[in-house]
Length: 242
Image (tube, rainbow, N blue to C red; front, side, top):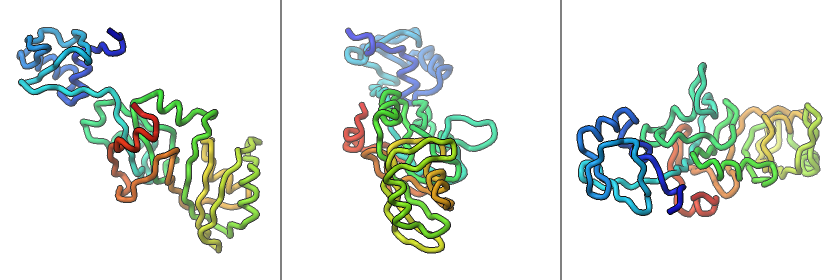
């Protein structure tokens, strides 16, 4: 039997919302947990998900290893799991979702809104963030100054950032051009503050930034800033999750 199918009982129960490791020990001590119809005595015993049946208070436990959350990240919240000085995106999650210890896939600046994927699937996160994969990300921005076709041509060739790095070609769509322009920009890498630095390279400043897509994922327009939901099975399949 595959070793990857073998887990500690307390981990399984924690990930299904039964409680913390300490609370689970108390539940087990109270003879409330059964494996294959037998009362469990040790919370740290190992079970095989494909073979064993687990019950708590007579109700079957359905275990899943991974979680995938689509969030509309609000401004003022850090794309991190912890910070000593400010609120992080994990703080916005319900306890039953925090139990899975999800983390943000990539980062959005503190003042940037929009699509953010949180998961505990490290392999999927690596696939989405790997520079070799060139995963497309589309942003909406309001930019101080008149954005022109010349800017679009520059982005299509790749622009040199303030540290000398030349970006991969990006695709600029001008929605409105004026004293404050509105644009969509698709890029295929994720350098630090990249969209802001690309516009700085052509002499303009991003005033507002929102991520709309990442790979096959699209921001759910029904989600207010700070709200989130689990991915649908179709979204997960298209993304390559488990």
